[in-house]
Image (cartoon, rainbow, N blue to C red):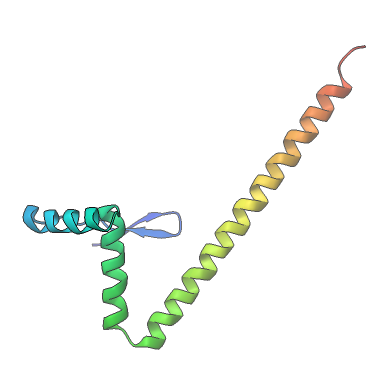
Length: 98
């Protein structure tokens, strides 16, 4: 089964048996985490154990680059939006009759 996409991230839907799901919820509550965050940590820890160190480290570094690019794009998008709003405000101010 293929994962869904959520932006650049992959989205997996996992069904768990109720008693084991309750164990996850209990651990998450104890650690003051959301259950989904705890599951993400479990998955990443498992990948780190199962894969060669260099392969996992390369994936982590690639993910960091993707995140940094997303942040840069978000900042650039906000700056462009601000500039557009300022230009619209200026144009309205120039068109106001005295």
